[in-house]
Length: 162
Image (cartoon, rainbow, N blue to C red):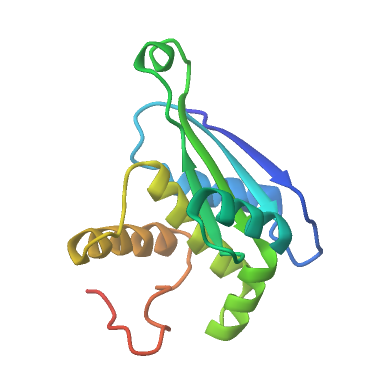
């Protein structure tokens, strides 16, 4: 099954993972999908992310990742060759800062947030402890398949999940 993954780079830098890596991480997060999916990943600067976060969440700061699930009428969805999941927006300056603070590489942190965002687009959430535990276990499993260690075990004061 071939997913359609559109990578948009509003910012670019030498330290960013290549497009093949981004697509591989997104594809890994879509491993349970039985239908080909379509989504867009956009890499942005702090100014664009701040504007999006303010417009859609009422929060006036740049955040690390935003997920915008597609919300189409069922009659349109039924006619589409791929399941339209939506859009992910990642803020590179925030990811760089967080990766440094957490002692991770930019690639590891970016992989984690791409997987996290893709799971949101597929309906996963972390509004309560049970949902958070399920989503985190899924993230840990997907990242482990890519050789990336548990992103939660390095966070101070947070217990590692089994």
